[in-house]
Length: 334
Image 1 (cartoon, one colour):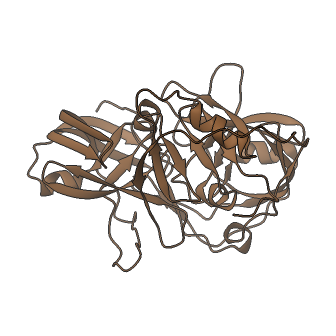
Image 2: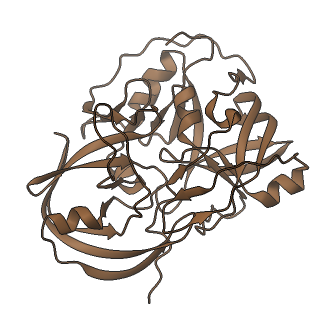
């Protein structure tokens, strides 16, 4: 069977209750203070409200495909435009065409394609005659949305769409912002920098996914910024190389792909520096190997994943128009 390792997301749904993963890390400190910027007007943006998972970390968008509305996790770690759940496509009576298999963080999953007459993402994006990727998402990927029973997501809204739309994933507002065609891609970044935000540079891979430079003990690594990851992840070999003390965890990890990983170890890194700008006194990581085959640009070294809990704690805005992670000053009130 043909293997397509890039279509599957790195989606993590972690059965972790360790206090270090649940609690917000100490607030970061800027490596160097920045001068007060001049004011700039916020650009016109199309707005798509997102529903936060009840723990506030995962953001869910409503997407209408043909005559059905589905709930799609906003997943900057998914190397796809939209990835539809097999169950959702079958409910619409779609014919599935086998397209190999993909690798997730804990195992493999069958892949397919299906044809939809229309795909609408809010009022901003309306696509016609689309052949979409379909995955057999594992049954443990449950969402608990406010006021509703737990249910399976209907798919993922991935990095390829976010890059093409020049979208901004906004944690403070639980919103997806999309600039009209006549608005410059860096206009939102400029308005946020003028409001006092730090703009942390990101590196884009050939699948449109965003990576941020993180320095640990003076060594630089690229970490995937993943809005669907339930925790920060560090490769075990890097923890060994850096001499970080490992503590045990009790619960297994489940995520994209069928299967689970045995309880991973956990480490806490000191004085991690993000994007050369923000320094964290302490930052926890789960130790999980790279089972998804992630590759970073030549000359860089892959270190792991920066997950949604940290992005939420930072009140971050992930801007695909400028490929910047926009973070309010730690002392600025929400």
